Length: 314
Length: 314
Image (cartoon, rainbow over all chains, first blue to last red):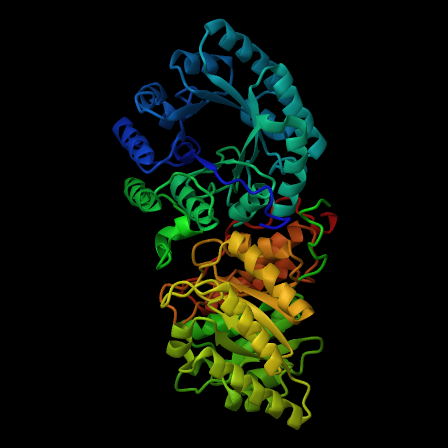
C-alpha cells in the first residue's frame, strides 16, 4: 500500500458485455440456446453481471432479436444481475416488461456521433431518460436506469469531445432521473492520463452514482486505461469475452477489453472478482469455437496462466 | 495534474530492443544491411537509444554474429546511444573494443533461471560485474555498465522470486561496480500492483541509478505495467518494434512491449519521446515484411492513429 494504491478497490465487478456489444458487431449469429449456455457458464465461472442483449429494432440488429427470450432465461439464474441496452423509451418499455435488473441508455457526448448513431442530439437523449424514468416509476418495476456516456474521450467523426461537455451530460442524465451513470471510450481514443483526468472529475460530479468504465482495446490501451481508473477507486468495468466487439457506427473501433485478460490482471493485483479464470478460459474456448472465423482478441488464452499462479496469495 | 500524476515524467526514452531481444528469439535471420537500415530509420524516426545486438558466442545465437559490424555502423550515427548485451567478461571486452555506449549484463534473480540460462548463480554474475568494471576502468573507455535484473517478478522454472532478493541483487550489482541497474519481467509475470510495489522499493535502493523497466506482453499487461511505473517517475522503458521477442530460455514468454504502441500511449499522455509515430509505423511495416511468417504483435499498426490525433496538444 502506498499513496498511489490507496484508493485501489479490494473488489471489482467485470460486467460481461460480449453478448451485446460483442455479438452486435460481428456477422455470426449465435442461437438463443448458445447465448443461454454462454450466460449459464459465465455465471458458473463467477460472473454476476451480464448485459444480455439490447432492445433495438430487429431489422437494425437481427443478432439481438431474441433478447426477450435471453433475458427471460437470465432472470432464472440466482444471483445474476441481467442488464439490457435500450436506445429509447420503446426499448425501455420492453426492458421493464422483461423485468431486466438494469437498463443502460447510451448517450454519445459527441453531437456528430449521436446524430449518426441515434439520430438525436445528446440533449434529446437526456430528455428521453426523463420519459424512461417516468415510465419506470409508473410501472412499479425495480429496473435500474444507467445513463452511459459514450465517445467520452473523442470521436471518429467530430474528433475532440470536451471534458466539460461530458460532465455536463452526466449531470443532466442524473437530473433527468438516471439512477447512475457510466463512461465509455466507444472508439478507443482514451489514454491513462485522460482517464485519470476525466474520471476524477466524473467522480466529483456523480460520486457513488458513477458506476462503470467501458474501454475498447482499439490501440492496445484498454488495460492501462482500466488501471488508471482502478487507482481512482472505480469498481466496475465492462469487458467482453475474447475481446469481441466494437461499435458498428464507429469505423475503426474494434475489440472491447477482454474479460479474461482483465480478470487475470485483477486477480494478479489481489483484487477479488469472484471469477474462476480457468472456467472463464474454458468458456472462451467454447464461444470462440462458435464464432470461428470472426476476429477474437486477448492474450491470456494463448499464454495460459503463469506457472505457480496463486491469486489468493496476491 | 493530481496526486496520482504528480511524478509522471514529461519525457520518456523508449529504448529499442527489437534488434537484440526481438531477433534473438525468432528464426528469420536479418542481414547486416537490414539491421543497419532498421537502426538508421529508427534514428530518423527519433529513437535515440538502441540495443543493437549481443556479444554471445555465435554458435548459441547465430542471429547476433554480426554484432561487431552492426555496432560499428550504429556508432557512426550522431546522437544515438548504442548498447549491447554482454553475458560475461569476454563479451564485455568485445563491447569495450567496439566502443559501445552501454553494455547490459543480464542477471536472473531466479537462481533456477540463472543456472538454466547463464550456468551461473546470481552472485557469480555479480562477481563477473566486478571483473567487467575493472576491465572497463583499465580500458579507459567510456562504455557504461548496466546490470539488468531479470525474472524480477517471478520465473517459469522456480515460480516466486522474492522482492527482497531482487533488491539485494540490485544493491550488489551497484556495489560491484555497475553504473546503473534495471529490472525486467523476463517471462511476463508482472502486474501493475507488483510493479508499483517493487519499483517503488527499487527507486529507494538505487535512486537515479535505477534506469529502466523491461516488460513483456505475454498476458497483455505490458502497457498497464509501464503505466504503473510511469506513475513512480520511471523515465526509460525497453520495447521492441512490432512487439517481437521473448526469452529463448523461458518457455511461454512471447512478445516485448511494442515500441509503436508504447510511443502512442506516451504521446497520448502528453509525454515527449521524440518519436515520429508515422515514421515508426512505416519502419514497423518494413521490418514486419522482412520477418514475414514470424509472429508480430501490437495494436496501433492495425487501427492507425486516431483521426484528429494531435499529440502536441496533449
